[in-house]
Length: 337
Image (cartoon, rainbow, N blue to C red; front, top):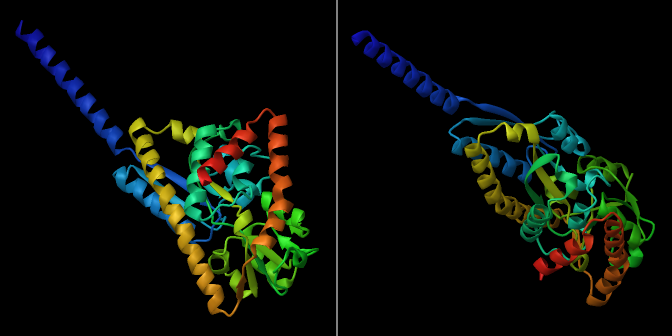
């Protein structure tokens, strides 16, 4: 009888050891993830992303370690999203606009609807993406979306003070901003931000359109002489932060919750970073002796009229594809109001 009792005790002890050992092993397991970012390491948005990665590592007690590859060193800007889908990187950040046609519904985020600042654009972009959750992003886990402050025209030589000044000018632009330039009478030239400095320097383009932060963040203030604020048609460029679905599904629920919580907080972090960078870009270009122009109310109305067909075209095309583009536009306008 005592032998049976002893055997039972031994079996119970083995079960306890195996169970506790398994728990410790699960807690001690680490996930080493790669993060591809197209921004250079010195850019405020790259720094914000690095801080996000550090916060995730901190809150998971080091169980998740994220190695950041900035400046397109792992995947170039237009390949970042598909690089995440294919597992080249576990996480990626780039612009929806760099692969036109790939995200038909979310192109609506970039429309010239009068975004006032980066904080607002970032909140709108994230909320719209999560609310509509379109099929075009179902092949990744969307962590959050951020977006820059209103686009500004930056010219190498000829200043733009009226819509007549931009006629025939070659302007670097991507995605929907290319349509904006075309509708305004300019000639859009597509290229990533990383190529813009050299294009301006060599005269391949006469100017570029983007947030005023690019004048410092991408050093473009060194190769332009003037900028023109366009608040009435303030567009943005939205940028995704996504994770490979297999990577995401392989994480414990507890860690998924931590990453979601940090991502929710970092919407405000990125939005503020955009606004701080815009302020720094404006100060930087003025310190260099460059000029910044505004448009009169009457002149702004001319620009609004020129870009209105872009919004109508987006609604028509998405509706034809069975996508709720009209609802996206209405929702954005409501949020902006």
